[in-house]
Length: 76
Image (tube, rainbow, N blue to C red; front, side, top):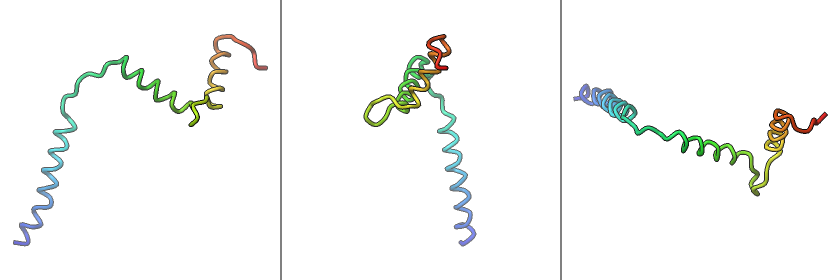
């Protein structure tokens, strides 16, 4: 009887593993590129704002680099 109890553990792990693989490998619908890019843009902008909704210093420095790249005002 004890041997059967010890066999239940690996068998249940096997069954749970098979269920997880079947769930993880299921077919999923194709994501829309425009929606995912918009979500990523909103996600990145959330990191660039302070808690008060103002632009952070990191965002200001990024804007300066983009201005320099476009040929705007020379900071030096």
